[in-house]
Amino acid sequence: MDTATVVNRYYDLANTGKWDAWCDLFAVDQVMDEQLAGHVEGRETLRTMMAGFPAMYASFRNSPREIIVDGEKAGVVSHISAVVPGGGRIEAGVMNYFHVVGGEIVYMANFHDTTPFRAVLPAGS
Figure 1: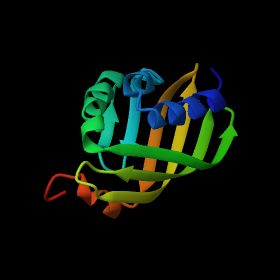
Figure 2: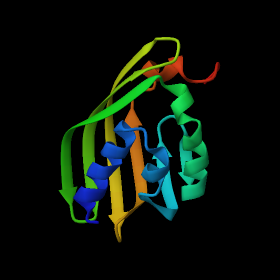
Figure 3: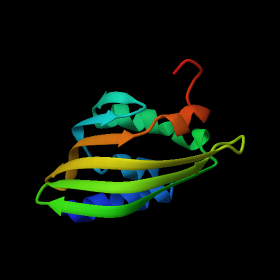
Figure 4: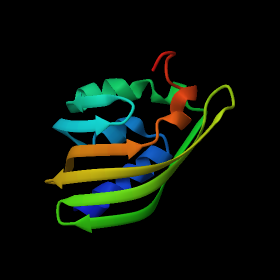
């Protein structure tokens, strides 16, 4: 898959809750810098982390607003709309950076305001 296809698939899988297939988009030795989860290395570490994701949200949607692709790199401005099991809503603007090599995400960085996510973070986060 080319970079644009991988990035579009990333959002399609996230928005349909297919987290295992979503993890398969990443290289085995992927690196992710995520605003809430921190520095994450390895696809299986990511898969373990994402196993708990469905319990955190009653609904989750990450809608791309603008996608810019330049060869192996892409930047995406998106908006997350989510509902937590207790009914609280999360609305947040997001910026994602992707580096895709050989049809796999080798590096990703995620930037957003963490305040809207306090409803799902452990106390003290």
